[in-house]
Image 1 (tube, rainbow, N blue to C red):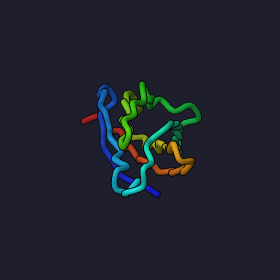
Image 2 (cartoon, rainbow, N blue to C red; image 1 turned 135 degrees about the vertical axis):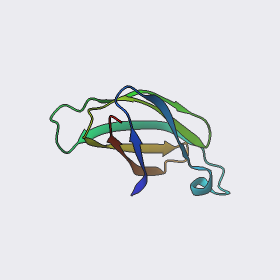
Image 3 (cartoon, rainbow, N blue to C red; image 1 turned 60 degrees about the horizontal axis):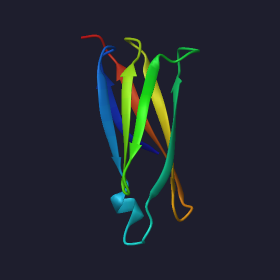
Image 4 (cartoon, one colour; image 1 turned 90 degrees about the horizontal axis):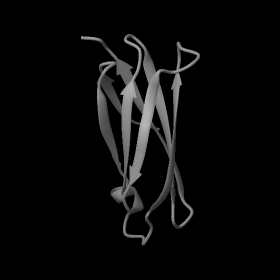
Length: 98
């Protein structure tokens, strides 16, 4: 499922948060681990970078940089909880040099 769509410039380095608190609900479950993979439709080697991933008990923060102007990227995020649940979501980035 696509969570959000963003536009960014190639030189920008920004953080993007995914809040899982509503999805985790009242169950005593928390974020345990996260992986993220960048893919591009038009480039064989994506230039959008995931610089780091930080987690709290209910949120995941991705630090994103780079990208080529005119190219769109999909970041697939897989988050596993301490209770063993797995969520896979996507963020879409369109890189524009304004």
